[in-house]
Length: 420
Image 1 (cartoon, one colour):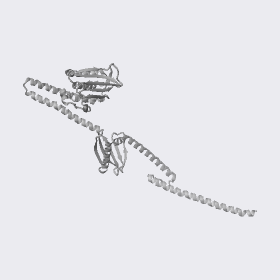
Image 2 (cartoon, helix red, strand yellow; image 1 turned 30 degrees about the vertical axis):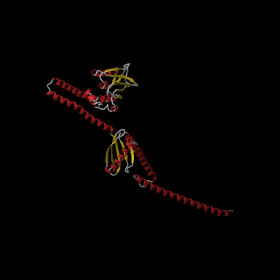
Image 3 (spheres, helix red, strand yellow; image 1 turned 120 degrees about the horizontal axis):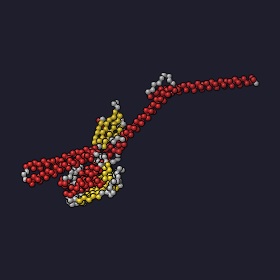
Image 4 (cartoon, one colour; image 1 turned 90 degrees about the vertical axis):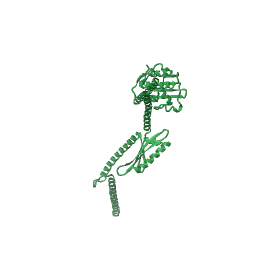
């Protein structure tokens, strides 16, 4: 039995040897594969480090290399986050600009429009024309380096846009092109008003000054006492007219400069009485009766007293001048929904409907001949409009030609007003 078991043991031992060799071979193969894979991984990590500009020590191994790459990745992530935050801040800052900004990349594709540019380049016909003009100027900037153009869009509303485009580069290559769109409509309007104002002032002063010179020259050579008196009276009238123009110009200049005048509670009845006293002589001369209606009980409005009196006086003066002899003017002050409504109504010649939009312009007169006869300067209603604006109020007018006019100056009582 023992002899029989030896071959079996030898067979089992042989099989175990073969198995052991197989295991050793497998382990050796696995170890070799790992060494090969590790070498490949080290090569790939070295290539990646080179692309990132990281200097690796010789024979550093996988773990140190991974640690360095992780540090570089963290710094890169921080840089990207900071750049993203800066880009957001830049976008928000550009959105607050009153000008429209458009940026194109190096291929000519639009990569950014701020909020103002989106608003200016809307879908209306005039905006479509502006958008096409901007596209043309962007293309022109690619060729010339910069371009600019002023666009008049007749609306409505009428607008004027100034567009400037500029090529962007870093000194080595072109980065794109930017366009800046500036709405200069209000600036253009103010320039036109200023030019018209200077021209009108020159004309208004030149006419009476020329008349004064001519009358004085005639008076020097005149010996007839009656003619002398008549000429002297004319000189006095023209001098008074020049004085009125200068006074109204100074008044208007002061009111325009006082956009936020110091205010105090002023009884409505007081400003109405002051304005009425200033116009009383002109009303008596034309036998025009003025009926007054004050608020009951008395109320005080927070306002700049001189400006308010000036505005009411100009409304009353116009009502008296354009009333018929012996006519009636109603002057009232009422309180409604937290506002004071000063109303001046006459039964005079009225205003044509086509003129209503222009009567508040400086020096504008509906009837130039009548205004010159009555000594009007054409500045009164402009003063009223500025007083209303300075008090966050408004001025309204209703008129029918031949039936009279009603002007209303509306100003808020404000929270500081009180009953007196």
